[in-house]
Image (cartoon, rainbow, N blue to C red; front, side, top):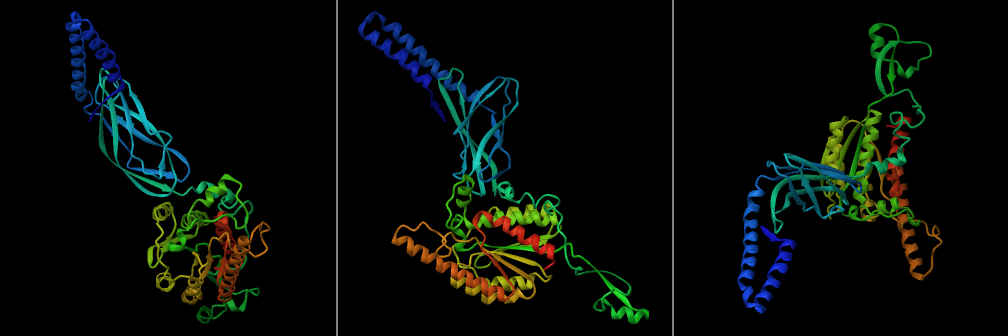
Length: 455
């Protein structure tokens, strides 16, 4: 499509209006005025006809996949292909999704002569993680005399993937990711180990419980089993994507937020916090040499990835997690535990990221967890609701409404403590870390279990 530019309006006003008025007042200047106005319209018409020939062959190439981190400013590379020999000036527009912001609405590029391809950088910043598609672009080219602008669009096949910002998460976990995840000091692992290594002849300091009686009977003299510390273990993150995960992750309970980073943490949903913490745990397990697996569920199991390690496996888990959307459904814990009981045979560490502040859901979880509680090591973690604090923990009570809010928060906190005691009797750990401390708490739990060989 062709659109008039300000230059066209300017010259029409500067030529047509004065000479029309001159012809009306001075009859002898009618012929001169008509010639000048006609010449102007001929130039305008010729400029409009030539713009189609000047813009043939110019295309814009966009990358097939653009990877961004949420809240981090980045640049998207664009390539303008120009088969001509003369310089051009283009105006480029991209219909970015609402979740992708940019400091400029369009980009103006000057293509030098004899340059078939020009690279441009478009600054973007993602405000929400997920997968978005960019299916077209728009170009505007100015005509030779500058009277007209031709605008046209082209097809694009660009997928924008917005991942969680793990760099901010790892700021508080720097010690765990130094020295191969061992922290700034090497952690001593206690115990004799669980994995069988070899058989050897009995010596006087060996324990009688380590004697292999079958090998002793075969050889005719005492044979002892030698064990080694189990290095490779299976870690599974089980993420709840049901209705309670759609809520905004709260602040640090009764404390107020003072830092910009805390505001950014509280602006995310609970599911996004679960996703970020799971990816951090995957990196920690990778550095420790363990196998990392993943399961997502709501009213049924949505995705399951067997525990493995390696860069390709981590990228596969990341590609599933970043595009997760919470569903407004009630989780089915019985079906979940039945699935885990049939799919995970080897003893593993199962870390649940769920929400048990609903008493009905907490009761269903406790009633069904015995299916896997005896075989696996189970840890349950949830982001502590900002209202779930003891009654006299906050001094800023100024009205009757504040009193009732504190009473409601105390009842919620008491119910969660009761759920914690019930799960502890079944040998299951339950924790309620603050929103911004979820990732650090999970890694700390994992390192502690790894050190003590509880698994």
